[in-house]
Image (cartoon, rainbow, N blue to C red; front, side, top):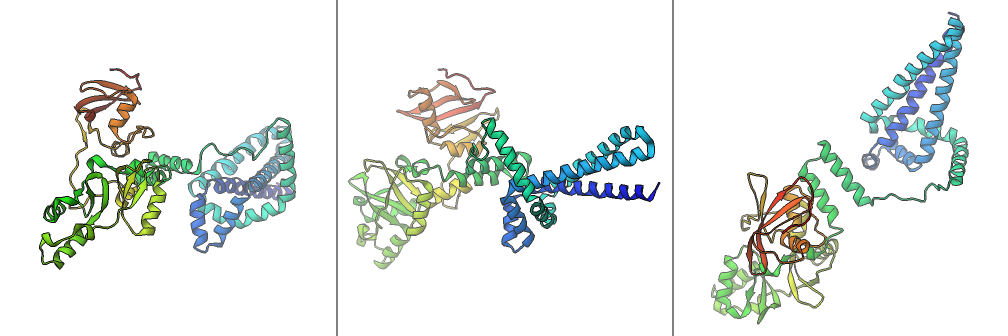
Length: 428
């Protein structure tokens, strides 16, 4: 072959290498993790700062890379055709089609994009400076073509940039974590913790409080000796104190304060004044967002508050531990009582106490029962049944069969939940 042919072949090689660069850069820069790049930038990486700058002008970046890809692919095809025509004559056009197709698919499409998808951050950092140079060179052409495209789309009634994502940032984050969990990159416990953290924005203290029916408290009129015995027998360090009626909360008795006072009077309970020892009660509305309550706990340096409704009636208590458990799951210590509220059965069914929160059951069994209209499993069944069911009745909704096992007065004490293949209509 002539020297000119070799020069042309070398130029074709350079064009294919440029195509490799453009295609790989586009894939890497669109697939790279923005969070990892921001972390690298904070660590002092100049190339990461350049990449983040490119991602801020994503439209110009992609436009420049596509222009570059089109130019080098067209030039490579033209030069390959010319070389093969010179060597083989008219049949060289057929050979050129095959050769340029194979070379483009392998070296300009599959290979660079495969590498970029598997190592997006590494590839993006490697091409950061060259891509910025390409954007600078092509910026006038890119701006012109962008204007033309927007004009054509406007003719058809489409306006770029006016439509926002259908998903909020929180939903996108949750969807990303769920996808990573399905792919095996994130464990269930980590997914649940992340989901609990995002849920804090949507929950109120009424959703996580300990209801007053299960709240342990003491009557200030019982006498110091009886109160000391009750506090020692309780698995809690902070005890609500009431007078006359359980709704009339007069303070919070801290076990450490009680022990200090008891030691100060020579361990004689009868000399104690419980009213002086008790701390002032803190009341919060049941509609208080959980995030706001967490901030209030931190600001006031308190861990305990009473939840009241719009009429001022006490509904229950909320603690800092209750909020943290929404993120990390149940926290048990050596003094906690063992609560057996969820009992999986061998046949796949689950026996559940009616007072078990829906969120806790979903987390334990990896279910998706709705908790918008009710807090507990019993509340969900009553809401869907529109009545207080009797023992033995069965209802099917949301893809689960709920059988009432036991009822105490007007309260569902326990029920059996069995997953079914498809949602069915409610039946009694």
